[in-house]
Amino acid sequence: MSKQATANPEDTNRRDFIVLSATAMGGLGAVGALWPFVDSMNPSADVLALASVEVDLSPIAEGQEIKVMWRGKPVYIRHRTKADIDDARSVDVADLPDPQQDADRVIEGHDQWLVMVGVCTHLGCVPLGGKKGEFGGWFCPCHGSHYDTSGRIRKGPAPKNLLVPDYSFIDDTRIKIG
Ligand code: FES
Image (cartoon, rainbow, N blue to C red; front, side, top):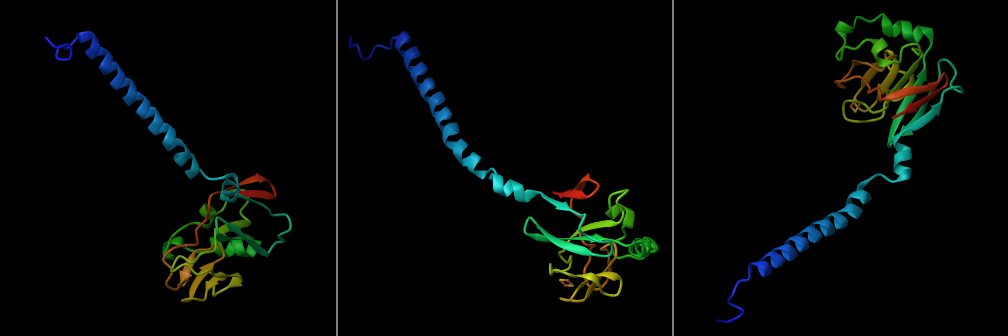
């Protein structure tokens, strides 16, 4: 009887163990190879820094607005006057193309500050700020959309109000966008 033809159960078990071990090592190797790839997909520190922007509001006088860049988009920050706020709140929201209360577009207790992404909701132009248009807010010259002092669409082809991004007050004069 040839030695080769005889299956020794102990040899079989050892071979199974070797195959299983090799498979397990192969699995670990695959995870090891995958990790640098997954890690490379995580945002780097400079990208993370751009994910949020801190803005000091103290230099913006009442009635003025500034534009800052956040995630590659312009963001308007307007220090509204009482007249701006009264105008925005005297509107019957049921008449608006995109009904939304002014109070829902600002942070309670900081109603004078309006923060919005400056991208027209029609086809993405940057509306002109500084009390432009027929409603004292922003005007998009591309196809004639008029936004009011709350950044809500009032006239023209844009279907939605200007977007209010996620932001919060760090203290009374500083906000963090994003
Ligand atoms: S992109 Fe603003 S009105 Fe068309």
